[in-house]
Image 1 (cartoon, one colour):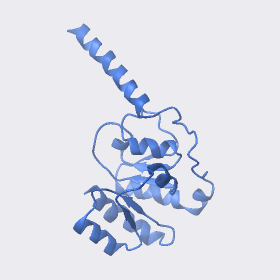
Image 2 (spheres, rainbow, N blue to C red; image 1 turned 90 degrees about the vertical axis):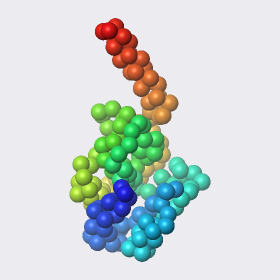
Image 3 (cartoon, rainbow, N blue to C red; image 1 turned 90 degrees about the horizontal axis):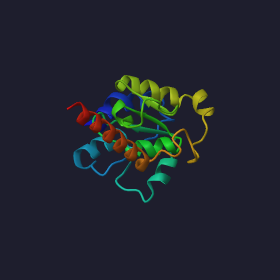
Image 4 (cartoon, one colour; image 1 turned 180 degrees about the vertical axis):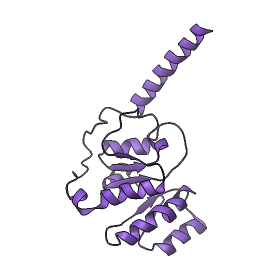
Length: 169
């Protein structure tokens, strides 16, 4: 459902406003049947993949990583990897769960699809894109921050909070 909403409420406007600049590749194991056919019929230029050999190499092909996922929980490792490679990440707040309150400058948090569209239009504008560094896959603001580090921090926080609760009882 999130992908359908993104296509109808955000991507359609981008494709209409920037027909020559808008290239989208969808990576999803779950995109099959009628949903896949509907998207391919409406947007034949879209590349739909169900598998890639190297997720990192796949990410480095792009400039913007969009996650239209509107619900979920826990650390979003795909978001973390895209941020750490220096890609601009445009997503709803839940995608940044577990990263703390100080997000890197390449993280764009969206309230709704209109806000997502605004972020994407700005990122796609020639003046902005021309001045953006190419993602190099080197260190960024998230260097040293990986799933193991975040999991360790969560566990430490959980232990501290649970000991406070036991002391209060």
